[in-house]
Image 1 (cartoon, rainbow, N blue to C red):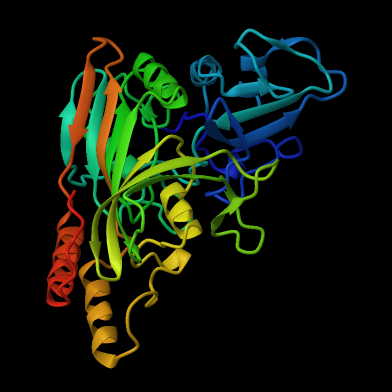
Image 2: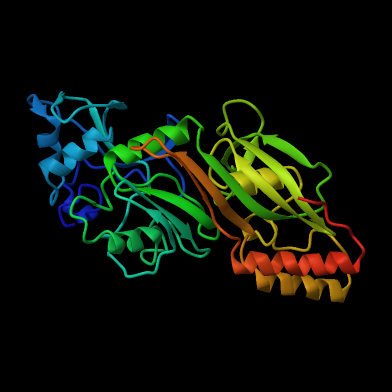
Length: 372
């Protein structure tokens, strides 16, 4: 992968004209057609520059790449001039701003294929559905340079000559958080990614999550609507903003499956797919996810102040040492056959044990669970 367009080191780029915009790997630079984008490279065309094809212009400035790589990026609408996608035969003009954007953060290092076991739910020539375990990052980033799903996919696809884990025209179509488990779809071809990406944008995919949240849910079902954006006080957190220019429109539908004394099991269905959406929306309505450290769910938020209850909660935290959230179902139309594809994954052992422990506790208090 030494000729990869996007994953070369900064030392390989000509000084002076390059600007490494993306500093925060979790914070996209802009959103377009419902998808987040990160700016990887930026150039301002020099005064006196003669008319030149943009693929030739970039291959002269990004050492170690190839025109074919740049042309693939242009085909995926990742080459922009003054903010608008251009084809690889576009001729650059002095003063124009050229940027290379991707729907993922920039990889700081070469992607190393790693033999990491994958729980593959389904696979054919066009796509793969994988059940990601909690604790595995999807993309390499700060502090997580290997051991990610992308590293595992690089190994799994190593014998497929047409698959390139860094090619923007294929690969992961969506993401879930490191400590969230569950289903993800991976496109193995450009046409698959185009089709699946459009389905996510058009909100025709079916995605349901199971979560354990703090507090008894008063309503059997409900909808949370609220713009989500990065917190102005803590850049590691997202928050809900009032309607207006701040944040991005987000909608989460929920159904209460069980009330278990001081927690509840809920099913959440995403209408949009914002960063930390379920975690933020549940906190917004007063029900943070159980053991969600980033959003305050790792504290005793409901129940009693006794030592025995505190010990019980700590045991629950140990059973499920992460936010209790699982991407359980995923549905979409197959990009080639047109067949509806629906997948379901079982709750992982840690969440199953957590729910069972709360069921036992609630039964001892003579609390009757709400039937699914």
